[in-house]
Length: 366
Image (cartoon, rainbow, N blue to C red):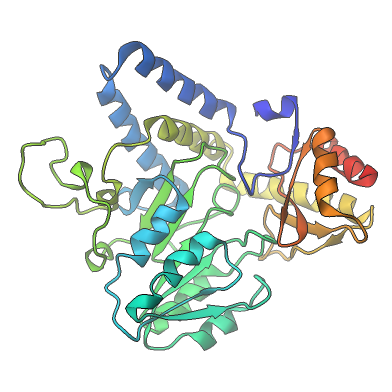
């Protein structure tokens, strides 16, 4: 990780530094297009399919269930705008969720869709709140796998089961967990998932993954259609409007080739260590971080329970101004962030004891 030469980096929950392999892949692509134009475009297109297979393997899904998208928001809108809503239908989601997983659903209200928001005042809600909000007119339950403010990890399987009992579908914004927490969509009952790679996957902005469970696509109105959505996508004279039968129908037009090259390289980088090893290491790092923070009087707001913890550690330093703390940390070569009125540290598996000590010392002096 090149970032370690200068920074103790604790902001992966916002925008992560890209990995060395991602940088190399992106630079290689940039050199190619600068020196050769599209002479080797066929090789780039082949790499897109390799990245799709990598993504499918990473989340344990079928390749046909994967679309390569620009960002998490794009995936949310594929579902929110694609469902054949009827007046009186409802959608359930947390009021405290990140705007990406709220605004597309709120935008449905003028079509007669009832908005049901749960978790008032805290992202650390219980699944019983989801169950109480759902009924036979619930079409979608949308949740983040991991909350952005305190890192609360939701029981997405239990939530999906609740949605299905009502005849609805479950959408998961996975951006704050994908890359550090195990996920097997082949054994899961969630219907849709969206995440881009610029956080825990250590990839560039503008490249990510959308999952739609096999058999669901016919129930979604296709959006963002373009030359790349049809079965004969390379034949520009073919008048047939027949769409691809896979999730790739949502890829529409030209790819973010540079971003996908970087995204694929980071997927390989992380997958090479194994997600269980990555998750175990991050648990050790965040446990040590919490212990050190408590030693200087910090109050940890994030759950550390086995089924609730994540890579996000939100905390308070009673009696201290927050913005000056951020400025002092930057001066000391430490990057962290603020969310929901608290300091938020989000280390990764390469974070070491020296990084943690550097953060704690900067906080002590702030």
